[in-house]
Amino acid sequence: MSIKTEQRWLRLVNASLIVLVLLWAIPIIGLFISSLRAKSDVLNSGWWTILYTKSRLTFANYKQVLGGSKYTFVDSAGRTVRASGDNLSRAFINSLTVTIPSVIIPLLIASAAAFGFAWLIFPGRKAFFTAVVAMLVVPLQIALIPILRDYQKIGLTGSYLGIWLAHTGFGLPLGIYLLYNYVSTIPRDIFESAFLDGAKPLVVFARLVLPLSVPAIASLAIFQFLWVWNDLLVALVFLGGTSDVAVLTQRLATMVGSRGQDWHLLTAGAFIVMVIPLIVFFALQRYFVQGLMAGSVKG
Image 1: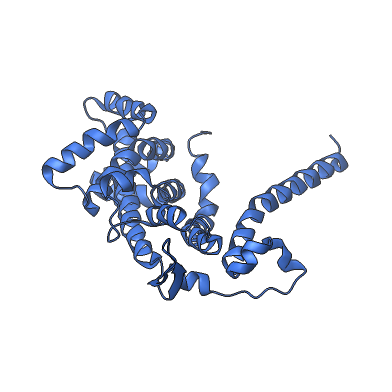
Image 2: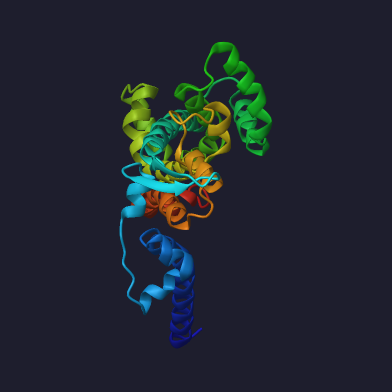
């Protein structure tokens, strides 16, 4: 293949990637613009009309859904009712409270387990690892009711500790498998030198495995964060639907039921839910491909 042909193919690939990025970004841009428009504008025209018409943009929708303002509406009896905002700020804090430990705990456990399966020798290592991999094909839905019954017996229902443990258990099989593929590719000489110098496994894990496994850990952190942050089913089962512990996905589902006609508020709430995962992904995306390719090529 000539150089000119390769350049043409490269331009075609770049153009295709640009088109795909635009197709992916257009709904996000439209959602963000709609969240900044007034109710009358959202109901009467599309978000793209901002390109050729004068439309006032405001953060009033965000102020209302975050609970910082009052609004009025007419109930079924024709009475005008004044109420507070949807108070997503509390749900935002609840989501962070659920997500951060539910990411950190399985990352630490999966990293230690991957190091043990890859480099430590102990009875039943292959059998235990096979059992962990087999758990990948088990749907989490079949475990919800048995776990909930156990939680009710020991008093963990509706607590953050309960949902942290649930997300940790559901995320460990994939985490151990992904990190094992990466840790097993670390050169053996590094560990042999450390053990000859008298380093204990815990020291080797903390000072060698964790720093060398940053790409794989970052990839797993993205997967786990997106799963926990966007989760509705597990949070609804183990936390319940009360407003003091409800996460963002639960509050957004409630808004869809009670405010199905208020698109300007729903778009603001939806953008609040998705902005944190976008920040996390773009912050860690340089490690993402490298971590996903871990263990696929050796030598």
